[in-house]
Image (tube, rainbow, N blue to C red; front, side):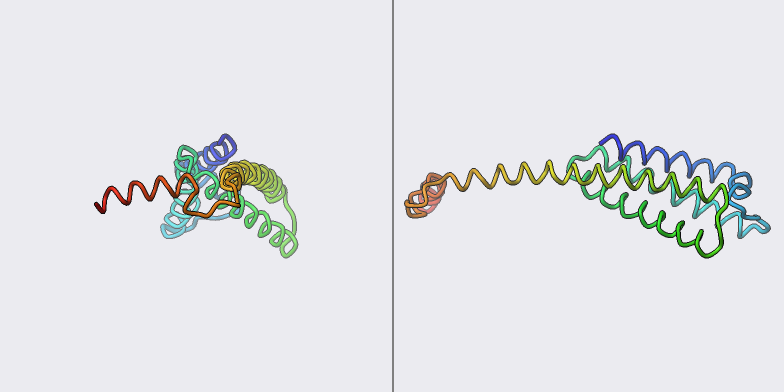
Length: 161
């Protein structure tokens, strides 16, 4: 899924930038890294967390069975960041950096939400098609006479005898 890969790449690049340019990225965010602990924490949380999220999103985007769940996770994560950015702006006020990250997070959350909804709808369509094949059986026949039941009975009887 393209949107999951794009968001994963963005998180990966952001995390690598925060890890490799900790002082520069911290200054952009308004942090002062005044101790080794501050450097370590910024490197771990802003670098490691974002790299981990990016790798997880990219990895999940290559496994068909993981895509829907990964899209949902990424959507919820991005929406939560967006809501917390709105709350922080309301509590402490706006600035250009916060506004740009808030807009970016809103765009990402919207794209992920739409992608997740589309994936879910496509999956629901496949499941409904699969379930509709069961509805085509004649309801007037007893279950034992349904073709799949007879095939099962034949296989089971050959194992028993």
